[in-house]
Image (cartoon, rainbow, N blue to C red; front, side, top):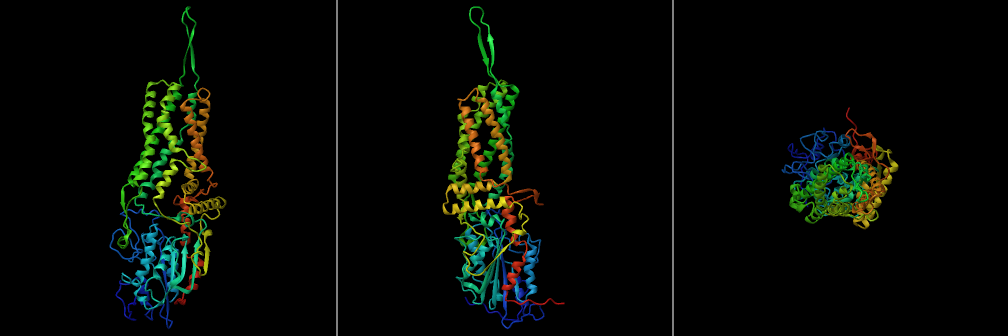
Length: 619
């Protein structure tokens, strides 16, 4: 492509240029700091690229999205509001607004060097999907030179430029796609990529590999990472399809379901000891014509029995509420959802109308839940009738529990094999999540497998507030998680996936609290069944209750065997309520340590890569 001719010295109308372009024009004024001091100056342009702002691709229509170029779409926010200063903390749509130390330091280069400019106008959808990262990188290159759009850097087209690419998280992979794109277009010969700065970028092994064709001869890489970052080496392995509305429906699930789960695991299993009541035997006098006969009644203590029945009815009510809420969420996710994406992306084929959960998987989930719900109804009716009668025979309780209709389907739904991780719940979990995976590619925190130029590693782990608080537990967990991901990468089996999911779940303290209550309930129920077994070891009720105890113990074994000793630090809560070492903290806060400031090693790296000269501050 022939670069547009730029006439030196002619001012461009105010407001028509980006900040970087305006700065380039300002540099033609000899009265400005940064006036041309070289016969053939080389300009340093820093491009900052945001990371994934929407890991599950589910932003609603009333939320703004970043975009790689200007648009009138009200649902697309600009990468940075040009009406606000670049370093503005008030620009809430700006990805970097929460990192003033980092941004201010970059802006400082514009004053400390004669030809350094920060280009912050780039943004992208932020979706955690491969296609969007590819398009975001491709469009950035085309936008800069004006291929199909007005050029973002018209004032630089006839100049020598060294680009310094800085990307946080998947922004680094957008940068890689940018290098692939500019290798295929009519890119200005004097525009070279001289440095890459990756901030917590998850480096894939198969996808998003950079193309060095436009690299400067002295190009280098600076890789900034935090060892406590769970996203970079684990969570980012999954690139997902559009999951519109998932947050609306699923992220709220723990808050909605936890109160019901708490009531279930708070059931006192010792109440089953009421079943161990001794039979009452009375002697009946039949006169002198016959020998006396015995009459026996085998009733539970009325108070203990009423408490037991009431507690079981409460549990059944909570189970119904949980299952009905799950069905409601599944039904909502089974409706067609339109993806909401930037206008130019729509034109490139990113519009997708899909059901998050397919009809097939919905059918599987509903079938299993309905089997249990169907058994609850007659059981509830029988229990309520017994309470109304005021008489509680032990054998009556056994028949009231409707073993075949309720307990057997419940066991079938909950059972899990600790060795193979097979069972209804693991199978449904895998079936539902598998439909959302676009690509699985095990990510690394090193990039020597994709770059053959000098790499400067910068470990900022010590800047994390979690630093050394739970090192043995955390690194045990991280090591096991990485091994699990490598196993899934080699053999993507249901076992490998479920193992990863349960390994993560086992570290969540809220789940640990539920497990502790479940352990107490299981032990108490087992003791009660042992006492009851003295008088009844053959009934279906006794046998199935022991099966239910075995299922509970299997789940406890599965989760306890994956627990790494406690990675959270409850005694040191953060101001925002997020616990140090929680999965959320490690996935978000630790993932952002790399962009909290422009660390000295990164500052030194960039200064060493600049072609611009440092200028002495004016007195």
